[in-house]
Length: 271
Image 1 (cartoon, rainbow, N blue to C red):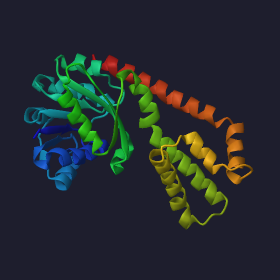
Image 2 (image 1 turned 120 degrees about the vertical axis):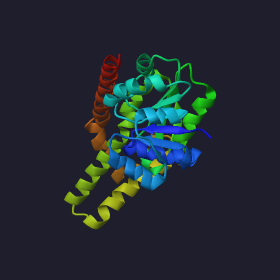
Image 3 (image 1 turned 90 degrees about the horizontal axis):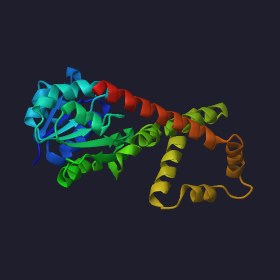
Image 4 (image 1 turned 60 degrees about the vertical axis):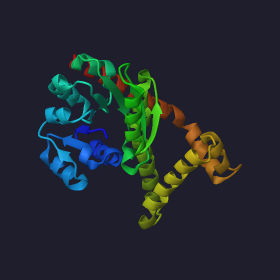
């Protein structure tokens, strides 16, 4: 059974601790975070091994999952690089290229880059994944299994990662915002407050389940709801007249540009 070390036990790190414990058992998991409060929570909840430093995590593990913020990853990698040998290194830091990691560690080790999103917390996430040339299929498959514990995994070319960050990484916030808007409108139109949240959120959930389970395109499903001369058609006409698709395009494109900017920034800082 592989021994897995996790550096960073924030929101996403905590979710992945749960996934990894389910894969290798809590006795084979080693965690470290600079915030002792987070470590205490992890230890209490998952009964994993708590390390004294990032270096200790690497020394006791074969697989290292780095779950720190992009601004912190260069410092962490510089701290552990001398202790990396035949490890598999998995990074979930948004915007941090594999080539940047390779430049910092200066070693030919297996590296997997993953872009997960927040719904991993409810085992309904999507994680885009890619690897470097030093990563064996055995290591790659192991990395994929971690994230499959919490949702679906999509293999992609690294050049698409910044765009995926804008669409999938940020995507849940777009849906949350839509839910927020509809709930606010329902309140203004005097729908009873006690039913609004459940009514709207289960509508979103039901629509998502139809998209994933019925294997019908979003366009076709939209047309099934929007009968000729009905209420839905009247609402959609407003969206079309205000060119809602162009607004979404501009928003997502801005997120994409920012992802590329952050990627370039981290690349410069890391070298």
